[in-house]
Image 1: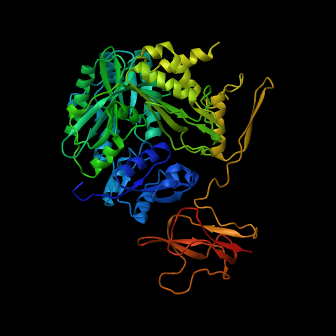
Image 2: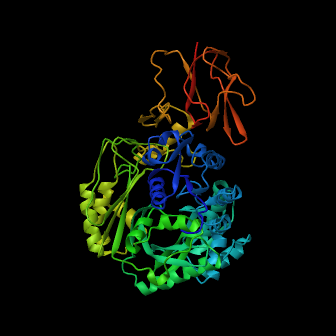
Image 3: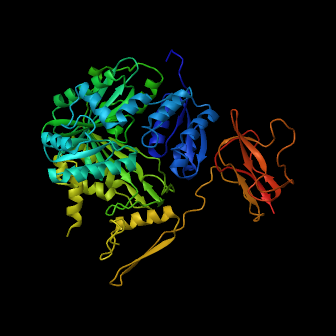
Amino acid sequence: MSAPRRFNRVLIANRGEIALRIQRACRALGLETVAVHSEADAESRHVRQADIALCIGPAPAARSYLDADALLLAARATGASAIHPGYGFLSENADFADAVEAAGLTFIGPTGASIRMMGDKITAKRAMRDAGVPCVPGSDGPLPAEMDAVHALAAQIGFPVIVKASGGGGGRGMRVVWNAEELGEAVTLTAKEAQQAFGNPTLYLERFMQKPRHIEIQVLCDTHGTALWLGARDCSLQRRHQKVLEEAPAPGIPPDIIAEIGERCAEACRRIFYRGAGTFEFLYEDGIFAFIEMNTRVQVEHPITEATTGIDIVAAQLQIAQGEKLAIRQQDVATHGHAIECRINAEDPLSFMPSPGRITRWDLPGGPGVRIDTHVTAGYTVQPYYDSLIGKIIAHGTTRQEAIARLRVALAEMQVEGVSTNIPLHRDVLADPHFQEGGVDIHYLERWLADRTTP
Amino acid sequence: MTATPPLLPDLSTLPNVEEIGQITTWLAEAGLAAMELANGAGGKLRIAVAPAPAQVATPQPAAPIATAPETVTATAPFFGRLALHHPLRQDPFAPVGSTVCKGDTIALLTIDSLQLPVTAPADGTVVEILAQEDALIGYGAPILTIGA
């Protein structure tokens, strides 16, 4: 730390557990924090512990956490010279990243240009293909306007195909087409929806993988040409495209295959001058990886990679933003043991309805290999305005079996009253023989839930 | 219902819990308190949403105003450094005991060269100043109280 720092005070433009996680990393590096918050989050843990706390607006996110102008003014008013966007909210908003840098502040994340390139699925896929990252067979660009040409393309790719909006993501703006008869209507409808939802009717086409797993590669890149991959995560347990439980490494996939994909991801980062943390998401089926999208931010599930690699990803984000060189090389990155994360949501474990309210009891588990990331304390009120994530339990073990055993003990110890949580769901999933075997596909949880509720 | 694609559930059966959840969200967004669904068979479902909490939390606990129930508190419409005086004048905008009319400027919030007026929420007399001159105050922070 001989060179002068670019910033000493970081504005955390987020809330909940990730805001607290960022604050911890700032503290560990001797950086001051500014917690900007909505009125609804005034009593939140990271707000109370911040060096400077500032309420920037009312509860609705559009007037607080999504208000770019207010965030920039808050940085001015508090003397913060860097902004960490966390995940969600403005974290993948290229215009915001540009505005932060235009204001002379440091955006703790990639450049606006990188975010923009990865935000558009067609340009992202093209960049990945050019860098040798495997992609699912598809149209390799916007769909032609003539329906005959679309039909020819789909026949060439092979049914079933999936029609996707270029501006979409996270499961929105897509439609599966099983045969040629359905194609015309699917294209028309998806284009219309894409126009309405994303303001961009551009579509593309890909082969629809039927039983894939969701495998992702974490990367970390400094501004001196070093790009590292930190292993793989398996996030196949999803409900409505929302991840429920994640693990690292991906069970049953040989390390040399992961290493090959990881190296291609790192190479792609070098080619596009990517900086900071990022994640390449893939579908994986029958030994084939197919790039879906890149997330240009820290992810909810980053702790499982921290557990297996021993690398503090959020601290690394801050150091990279300071202009420092990564202190480790690829050969220093190893995967130790196995880690699993359960996302704890305030929701009904059967209906998945959000369950806001005051938490009256909050007994947390502990023991070897157990990590809890949460902003919640006893007496905390879960607000109805934001997502229902109230914490994450991460268990690390020498083997997957040990991680599962530790997680099951942790979930049994955890006692929450006042709101409903999905802890019972996690307990059931961990007891499921197919999950214990490892390697279930992305539809497994929804099938399992459907079977459970059908008499 | 024939012209409307399945925005609302088919009322031959009761909506499921998730559908009811979606409907309550729509109701809340539309500012409606309740709705009733009925079908030809005489089935009825009334969905009511609890009124939104008026003020969930104030950034800093306001000074107790227990003895003056008829006062109105002027709160910060944005955040910034509080100026109770006009920067170019000696006298404060609204000292204790002064008479203000709704809409009068009673303070300024400043961020660098940016200045935002804080206006009186009601007619009356200034009873108490609750915030410190030049303090950085957040959205919704109480600034002063006005009595009838």
